[in-house]
Length: 145
Length: 414
Image (cartoon, rainbow over all chains, first blue to last red; front, side, top):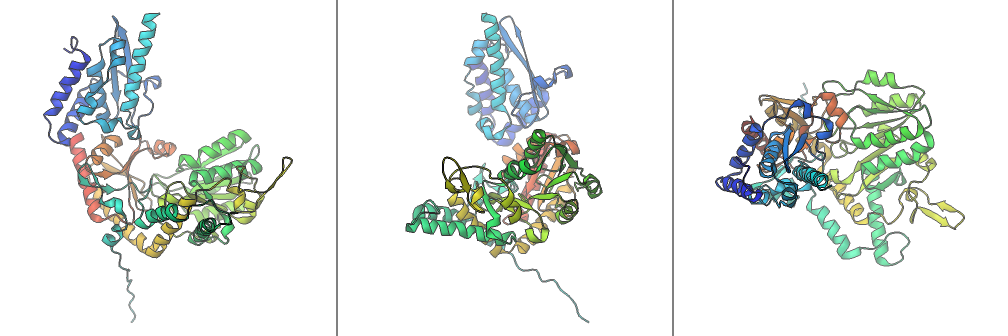
């Protein structure tokens, strides 16, 4: 359903949804709901090498490169983190490495989740984005060579 | 017939709160409830003022300066040493060495005393509830010297298994390094007994006082520990200043840690003679401002009286334990009989981090995670806990807000 939308359009969609919420409770209930709905990662992917370092909770991230596009799957033992990563996947998955690498991800600020980007939070949104982009960079390098 | 009544001195928490300007702060549009005191305590106005006054009026490098400012700064700096000596019951001021914090104190001993006295096959005993700071320096030392690290196990309640400890002791034991109060569980360990047993086999004992110094009366002579360390910032003082206590005889025999100014007597390119205690271990320009302000913090605690603070904090602990225990699915990790005002807990089907995020949104600061005690978390089979730790300025109303916020978080998450 997201296939034909640009990263920017997907970001705007999320921002619009969040604009309907008046309270922090509504925002977090939405994120928690996203977390619960995110398809659980198959146990065979829950390997130490797929764990994102720098998170207080355990976050697994795997990726696949198909027809010039990168697809991501992730899971976490903490549901808010899972909700946040679900949004990242919604925005970034299914795009080309260049599009992913160039994504500004302004929506995080626009939906009032900037505090999750603070390094001190160690809840890993920064590490997640970094790892997502690392994969994109790796596929870009592979596809160029 | 005589009746005995215990008269408890009055303690006005609202009056105490006035000394801590940060407690007026709002977080996420609500008056902040600060329950992360085991990580660092807030600072009373007088400590903040002392820092400001030092930099505004007599900032100068200490020792050897002959001008007025240098003398004033030196006098204030050395006055803190005397205050610390009294605060922890040391015999001599020169047994007090200023460090950056507990971690540096442990490392100092590992790198100096440890490298001189530990050799292949020797054993060092620590406990299963140590902070990483009291694990890693000894691990590094053991690897280097081919020595062996032994661990005192912990019961399900979070108490040290003393019989197991006694079995670990032998003539091979050279050092026992234990935490006085667990930062993850709140358990107060029977350090006096631990020390007595260790001394019987000729081992030296290091007590990590990072969590105990703010709550308990510390008397290193009565305890008879060989080393004791604490951090100023957990005792209402500034960050970046800590204390290492060591018995004079041991400190004198130890090799130096860092070389530089202050720690020398005479330097030629052929040979350096080192300064006497405590300067031998204080190379370079020390943390003058924070050291001076530490005195103000310790005086504040002494004047407020530790036993009165302790009464208040144990009331909070009792009340919070009752209130939190009543929440369905909540399990307290660390139920030792002798505890300081700290509660670690987990909640069924929720991750501590999620609870922490939702508490922060309600203006409540707690710590979540493994609290730098990963082996202990593994022992209890949890990825981490939510930890609420109370200080002299916390109130029952704040406990109520914590409990309500936890309930709300559970509702949102499940």
